[in-house]
Length: 251
Image (cartoon, rainbow, N blue to C red; front, side):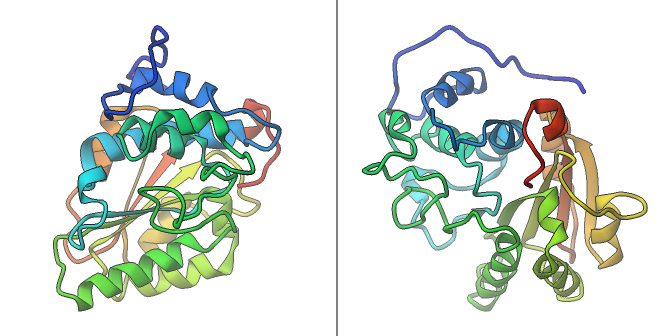
């Protein structure tokens, strides 16, 4: 797979202004340590998250409570390090909090808590919850008449082993939830599969779907912004397998 953006940069002081670049995210992630950090699972989402927050999502620290903001839901919450690094890089909370990751008195737990983490929309970590919550969020925004508010949810490919997600997929297509966007980070963790690949599962339920290299920033951006009138949209971002990255299969 082709990496389109450099991953390394000289060390620089901690920032509170949200002025970081993608190349500085590795430094921020290095501040988070511990035995339960799920490093490879988190790293698999880093490029996809960055492109979303840097170029697509209409939300910022100043608009995090705006009812017309875009919503991002991290369903893959058992590996939140990249999520925390991106939120800190964008100024949602001070980078100094990263070094306390997983500590007793830190707001940055091994699973995100929406009541403690600025910018987090849901508490997550249990597999299979995020996509159904995103469907409900999109329905709620539709009922409120907020046609310009988009909902994004990031799930791991192994979460598609959970039946709750298939019920959500089956409902969202016929309901024509065009505000709903699902990002599937595919690191080869799923126990089951589908003829034709993951995208075919969404397409069969009436979704727009596309599969891209999950490390290619331009391909991700093009997939995120692909028009899909009247249909929900799924982006399957393929990355290296967790086995290759040295972590057992757990979403």
